Amino acid sequence: MAVQEWVKLSAARLEQHRDRLNRLDADIGDGDHGANMARGFAAAAARLDGAPSDQPAMELRAVGMTLLSTVGGAAGPLYGSFFIGMATALRDAGASLDAAAWARALEAGAAGVQRRGKAEPGDKTMVDALLPARDALATAAADGASLAEALRAAASAADAGADATIPLLARKGRASYLGERSVGHLDPGAVSSALLLRTAADAWGE
Ligand code: ADP
Ligand code: MG
Ligand code: MG
Image 1 (tube, rainbow, N blue to C red):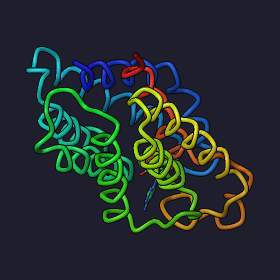
Image 2 (image 1 turned 30 degrees about the vertical axis):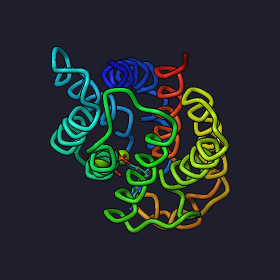
Image 3 (image 1 turned 60 degrees about the horizontal axis):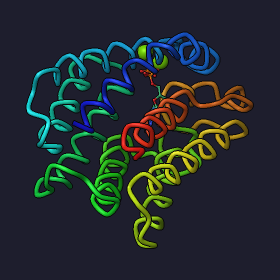
Image 4 (image 1 turned 180 degrees about the vertical axis):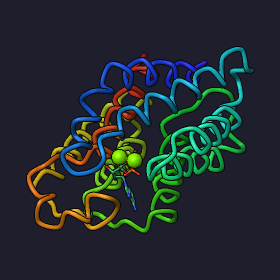
């Protein structure tokens, strides 16, 4: 159930935050990130509706494929790679995920994003939210935290990572065309990544 719940709740929240994400993207891009994400996750939630809910890897793969074909732009292939990477890491996982499984999945998802987009930390992209979240989740899992605790730690790290994109100069994606003018703005993709992780913490929270 949990993957479906995560994706459904993400679709609802991305719809709520559509205008805000569009405005953030209008500041340093083309103003479509909220619309792209809301459209993609609405399609992903619809795709999972009624599907078997005891196979997280298959569900995550279906989400990734749906995002690839519906989001477009830079974020579509990147989030597609994220979910497909998670799915691949969870190929042999059972129906219910624990903190260690989620840690493996987030590591593989973030690696998929970096393989596809070649962004490094500090380039002012979603990677700046995903890598701190990956590290926080791995630490929490190694410390024996519950999945809910580990995901909350990941979400908080992603929030901090997204906030920390404000002073950065964009070196990847559309925002990089602005050079110095990208400084002083939040990166919209880092904000949407943090939103997805906060939503995971809520979906798996107890
Ligand atoms: P587009 O720029 O094609 O309109 P979106 O607006 O949907 O696509 O997504 C923009 C977001 O994508 C950025 O805020 C950034 O976080 C992310 N992004 C762009 N290029 C890269 C990249 N090479 N690696 C990682 N993330 C990237
Ligand atoms: Mg855009
Ligand atoms: Mg665009």
